[in-house]
Length: 339
View 1 (cartoon, rainbow, N blue to C red):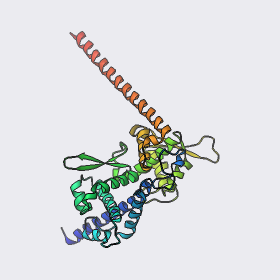
View 2 (tube, rainbow, N blue to C red):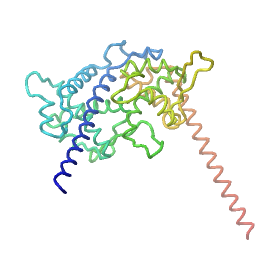
View 3 (cartoon, rainbow, N blue to C red):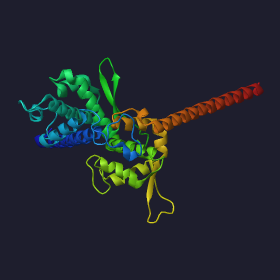
C-alpha cells in the first residue's frame, strides 16, 4: 500500500478513536451524575427507604461523578486507551492520586473500552479488560466492572451480560429488543434507549399518559433540555417527538381542546411489545439505587401487567394449538375421503 494512503488510514482511525473515547468520557460523566439519584418526588411518590432529594444514594455515586469529570477535563481523549501515554496521562503518579480517584478513572476507561467493543461488534473478554484497562488493580476488578456496567445501563440502556462463564466473555444487550428496521445502525440508536427508558417510566408513573412539560421537568434534572443539543442524545426534542414516534416507541399527541395547544406522551405499540412496566420500573429503581417494591403502587400495577401479559401469551398459545389441531383433523378427513 502506498505510504500516503497508509497515513490517511492511520489518521482516519485516530479520528474515529478520538470520537469514541470522547463519547466514553462524556457518557461516564453523565451516567455518574445519574447514578447519584434524582428526587423521586417529581414522579409524585417517594419510594420507601430512599434518601431525601440531594442525598447521594450510595457513598460512591457522587465520587464516581466527580472522578469522571476530572478525567474528562484532564485526559487527552484523542489517545488510544491502550497506549502507554494515555495510561500515564490518565493516572498521575504521586501522593495526591488516591485509590478512589484511580478507580474512578479506571471506570471511565472501561466505559470507553466497552463502547469501542460494542461499535466494532467484537466480543468482550475479561482477559482483555484486565490487560488493557484494569492492569495492576486486579483486586478491584469486580468493583470497576460493576460501576462501568451501571454507567452503560443508565446512559445507554444496555446491560453487560456474561455469555461464557468458562472463558469469561461478555456482551452488551439492549434493554429493548430493537426489532425495528434492521437497516438502522444499532450503535447510532443505542443512546436513544437510555432516554426512552426514562420517558417510558415517567409516562407509566403519571398514569400511563404524561404531559410534555412533565417529561421535560424530569429530563431537565438530568441536564437534558428541549432547546439545547445534548452530547449523548443529540437533539432531544427531535428524538422524542419525531425519531421515537416514527419508530412507534412513543405516541405524541395534542391534548384535546387545549388552547394554546398542549401535548402529551403515551407508550407506543413497540414499547408495549418490546418491554414491560416491570422492566421499566426495575430500570428506574436502579437509577435511584433501590428496588421496585420501594414504589408500592406502581409495583402492584406492574405485577397486574405481568399477569395480563402471561394470560395473553397463554391464550395465544391455546389459539395456535387449536388451529394446528383443526388443520390436522382437516388433513386426516381429506385423506380418509380420498381413500
